[in-house]
Length: 241
Image 1 (cartoon, rainbow, N blue to C red):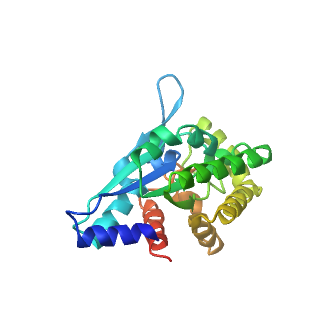
Image 2 (image 1 turned 90 degrees about the horizontal axis):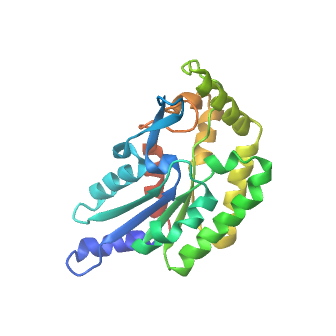
Image 3 (image 1 turned 120 degrees about the vertical axis):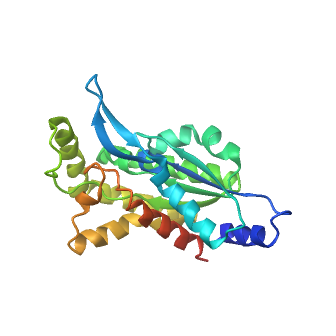
């Protein structure tokens, strides 16, 4: 991909070449959200820990591979975000920073819209890709993690269990699979590079791994360790032709 050519060029000529900028457009996982907690008003909030978000892991890997190259990260992940929400804010949150590469990751919140939301998801993703292409920004679409497939014994609060029942239905009744298949089809139609992390999670599940316990909140946020799966997969994708 061109992003690696730019990294290599900057490494050869750090004074003369523009700094490298990578942007990440997504939801709570992109932002760096992990466990949940209850607020005093009874609402649910998440623990924010950007030091372990996958964009930081990507930066660490690239700094190891190209130690002289400063990589500027734009994190445009927002908790609760969807593809349509990302489209609304794509200019001010991402394009205005002129990234060399945009990593887009949506699907977890979108899939909660069920079968009725599928076409809107596809349309919004397509428009995101169009806007980035018009701005001449290279794109990787990264499929997200799986959501829970069971109700974890670690979820003791009823409000968490109710949420987990809703996400389990989306995951186990084929809705999440359908959204990911739709996303891949939109990527192929637009010629967008795919980093299929969802497929890797599915392989883990097929291999007998309890993927629910790989979620920091046992619902939809991967553990800090599993953010490295995203990061390594993304860097591997960057090195593909």
